[in-house]
Length: 259
Image (cartoon, rainbow, N blue to C red):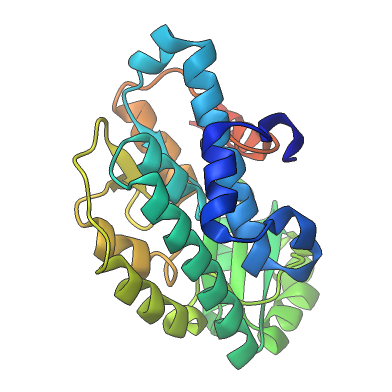
């Protein structure tokens, strides 16, 4: 995924700041995957601004899915790129370390009854980690509880369960050690004035307290479906995805089609 962006200033500056190439170690998990995705996202934004300056000048709002919040905040000028690289590296390491402390996992629930899935999550002490689009909720928590949810999904909620290939229970209370580390790192950086609103995952509304919300968002659900509906309600009619892949484009289309 890095090939289109090699040689671009932000990409190369990011590698310099990291002092390692995360793309050489992607199979080692989130500690390296997060910096890699972040660099691609920012480089993609920079490339788009060069290719479509008139469109870029008309950007009215931004949002990022989980890690994507950091690229969105860089795009809006809220986080300096150099600061964001360090924050992403610390976030990735803190989340990986938190996963080592407490065994956790995640499972996507595809289709099924929304209320039944949420009831199942409550009964098993699992967290709704992602509300991505109609018919796609992700549960997060202790691995044994995730395994139970996987077994019960079809009978109790009519959903297809798909275990995610992750090493920890992201966006759940099990990430508290990581949230504390990230909060400390955020205190050391400056927060700029946004050129346009950036919608936060935890509230599905524009950031009001970047330091607090970024750390708390490690413990809360990514409310992506609600965020897209909030952007639509704010009058946003065109969406451009920056970064590797086009998964979010599909989620946006499903959400807005169902609205």
